[in-house]
Length: 221
Image (cartoon, rainbow, N blue to C red):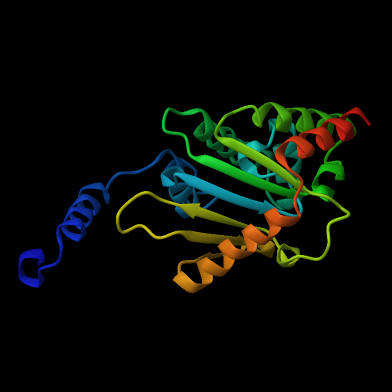
């Protein structure tokens, strides 16, 4: 078909590689009973992840206790085995940031996330200390939008932007909605608007140093 329809060399290489990889299964395929693997696959292949969170700590930066408390609260209809399987996914996802070809994570959170006690104050204190530790990684950039920040486009809700390095790979936006309903944005204009929104959020966010100082103060309290 490629010979028949033609096309440039990069397109041919990309399609041939896709045909070779299509039958490969990632680690997430073992957990398809508790979550769809589509986001896991995109996250695994991304070279840059931009995350804006208004309610919870980004999944890649969650401690075990924090994640399990969140999982239990969001999925009260599931049994403990399912909760632990979801936790196993979170734990495995975290290794993404320490691998050799780790992506760069730009995580921005609303200050309210840092004050929301999940489980207990001790669980939250350990989570805040873990955020500080994670920010020491050269590929992790953590910033906080303070409560005093003016209105901004990110007020509408959380989202994640994933960037890839393939010649034909376009950025993808991910929006997680209520009751587990998620949406993927692949339209170039929609993704561009998401990227612009992220940049505007950064304009009202504290610097990385100021953000870490705020997290330390909250943890002490």
